Length: 289
Ligand SMILES: CCCCCCCCCCCC/C=C/CC(=O)SCCNC(=O)CCNC(=O)[C@H](O)C(C)(C)COP(=O)(O)OP(=O)(O)OC[C@H]1O[C@@H](n2cnc3c(N)ncnc32)[C@H](O)[C@@H]1OP(=O)(O)O
Image 1: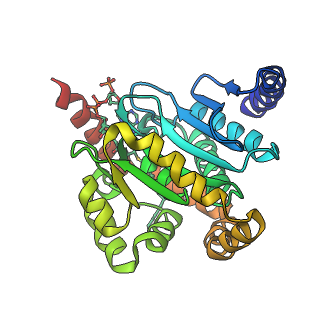
Image 2: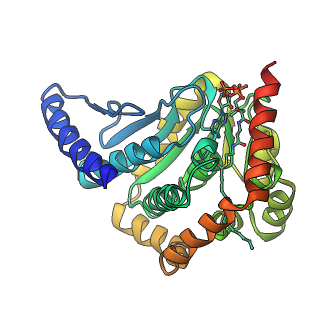
């Protein structure tokens, strides 16, 4: 309930801000964790995640992300969005592990509902989505990129991308899997999901997780030039084609959203799964020491 109220407030405040700044030409609106700028080519917004240190998708971050997308969808002058990160070296560390560890079932259910909501909105967006992957992109970070129509990644071997859930002792849900299969094919997805593979850029390109690699300082300019190419296609034909390609996958979740929330909640509440998450979090901490 509190989140629904926050969402209404943010939408309202954001639209006032958006209108005021439109007077100056380039527009910009920001929540705490998501910055949206509409400078550059007409009809294109750049959405930057800024939830330091690692852009983990906390409940607040998911909510702000979803609201920002909703506002862009409602703005008929926007045809494309470049999705990127403001955190150096990290695109997104994926779902926030602290939202899935040591909480109660009602919290898990609320969190998962918001994860579903963002995914459905991104995956079925009528806008052209291009990801400018300027850092590490494990699990939910990879999920965000996979929702886009085109993925440009920085060619830095320090960065990896992939659905690594099995390494954490958890299981990617069927709709993560479906989207992976749609993107890289059944055999590659089966192997990568079981092994929890995090692909360095060259391998990610080879397997098709990303579409193009460029030097780190060219990620944004390349994303813009890709966007220009996609903008040249009539919206109605591109949108109908996108819908035709993606609808069955999205419908598969839509028809069983409640059951999926129940599955997640009971899975993540299990002692054995909580133990795995605990061990993984400890490992992350120890890496530092
Ligand atoms: C029959 C079948 C049943 C099926 C049921 C299905 C339903 C169940 C489905 C369950 C699936 C749930 C899906 C989850 C998807 C996810 O996205 S899980 C998250 C996965 N993410 C990761 O594995 C990334 C982990 N992080 C890293 O690898 C690194 O942090 C990094 C490469 C992103 C960055 O490295 P570095 O720059 O060196 O920073 P760190 O020092 O490691 O981290 C800084 C700080 O951030 C914390 N942190 C990192 N990642 C996360 C995260 N995802 N969530 C929360 N917090 C994170 C890290 O612990 C550090 O914290 P401290 O500073 O130590 O406090």
